Structure formats: C-alpha cells, structure tokens
Length: 382
Image (tube, rainbow, N blue to C red; front, top):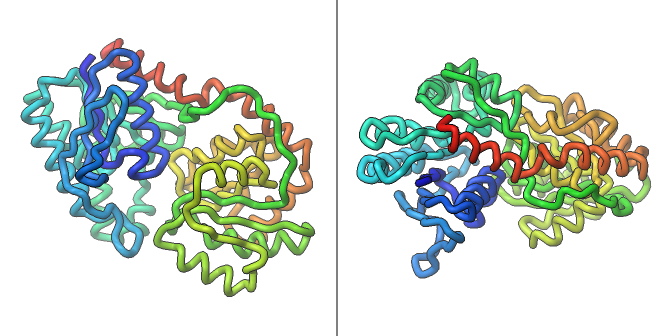
C-alpha cells in the first residue's frame, strides 16, 4: 500500500509524543512492506538530510520556529506547511492510497481534504487533542479563539477515519461534528512489555517535559518544598526547557530552594531514564495532556505518578488512584504535596502495585497494538 504521512514535525529534530508516534508509525509501515512518504517541514542542516529507515522524507515548507516568544504556536508556519501539503497532494495525490495526517496544526488536514478531489485517496487523521471552547479562548483570546475553534470544527467534518489516544478527546471529536466513530488507540509505548522490577526510591520527585504554561512546571517547586517539610531528604528535579524556563528558575530562587530543586534543562535521555527509574514519584502538574506518555514511562519502571484533575487533562486516564499513583484535585502546593507524600508513604508496596498495573495494561499500552489496529484499518479500507 502507498501511504503518505503528514506532520510538520519529525523526531528527533522535534521532540514530543506525537513526533515519536508518527516516526514509529512510518518505520513500522515500511518494515511491513508498504511504500511510505513522510511530508514535513525542513528541520535539519542542509548537508545532513534525515534518514528514516524505509521512509522517503519530503520537506514541503521551510525551516522556521513553531512557537512565538509567548510559547504559543505561530500562525504563519502552519499556513505555509498546509500550503506545501496542498501543492504536493494536488500534484502527487494519485500516487497514494492513504494520506495519514496529524490533525494539528489543522491546515494540513484541510489541504488533504481539498486535494482528495483530485487524488482520490483515503484520509486517516490522528487527533491527539480536541481543544474546548474555553481553552481556545484562554490560548488565543476571544476572536482568535473562536476562529481557531471554527477551523478545528471544519477539520472534524472532513471525511476521514479518525484515531484518538484518549476517551476524553474521542468524545470531544464526536461533539465537534465528526461523521462516524473515532477509534481510540491506547498504546504509544515502544519499550519492553514485561513486568518491571522496581528500583529502590531515591527520594527525588521527577518532572520531565517541555516548559510551557500548560505543563505548569513552576508548580513543582513549591510542591516539593512543602512535601520536603514532611519527608526528610526529599528533593526534586525538573528536566526540560522551553518558554517557562525563566519562571522555573525564578520559582526556585523565590523559594530559596537551590539546594532542594534542580533544573538542568535538556539532558541526555539516559540521565532522565535513570532519574525516573529511581524516583519516588513522577510529578506532572499539567492541566492539558492529549495522552500523558510520561505516566506510562514511569509505570513501565514501577514508579507511581502524580497528575492533576483538569478538564483538558487526558493523562488522568492512565492513573488509578492509589494503584499506580494519585490524581491531585489541583496543582496547588498543598494538593500536590499531599499526593507526593502519599507516594512516599506508599513505599515499596505502591511501587510493586504500579509494576502490577503496568503488567496488566502493557499490551493495550504498547505501540505495536496501536500499529496493528491502524494497519487493520488500512486493510479494511476504513
């Protein structure tokens, strides 16, 4: 089968859950004998083009920043990428049986819908998130938020086979006007599926992610400070970088916590993996997650997670309270600290329970399970 994958980011030049999923999907499809093209934007040095095993990578727009100074996505980049996708599919759409695109940043999905009149391919769309009207208003403001919401709704109405990675966003997509029922894929985990043997806890609370407003990384600092008053030797680490890096550093300075919380920025993956494996808990105070891959990564090491109950947070779907972590009612220092302390008090028993939880859910959480579902959808002409 001839398959065209579409996303303006390509792992590892851009790092994130969807980037990993799309690249893994491309490699798996190629390994299965399919002819695979990946449309993206330039993200690499001119003399070092990307090499993805079995996949043709085609850049349809230039290298430019995804985010503005405020940490929000720019409008120019997705417009130019969408235009590049439209031109490519208008010329080459008949070369593909399936065009499989990330829904965001929207204009590429709209472009695929327009060009299909000429190309006659099937459209498959990945919906990691469907934003609510309130979140659009918060993210872009009143008028811009309403326009963006209308564009999202237009994308939902493009005839497509839709895949979501949470029940939350599958429900929202139906409410947004999707014709048909989206398939929920639970698995993005590409690691081992065996039950982990939990390592002893180090007394460190670990955050790992991009430092953007919705991740609420600065909230880690006062939470760890408060929890450390109740747990001797407790400390924290914030891995990652982004627009809120200065706010993280300011929170550490304001709390006088330079000896208690460290923020080394981006580090080698092996360092993050080691810290997470030995963490007392993984703390994700995010209010918005389309999946929450880091929760699965923590559980795969037998480490409990602390997440926050929020309307846009699908990561809570990966946490059974008291089994593999806790869902804090808010990101306030006291609520997060209470959950951290409960993880500490849960000790070895909670780590073993987390390992059992992962073993029980490993198959549905695995990337291979999701890939099999997608491949079956291709074969069935869904």
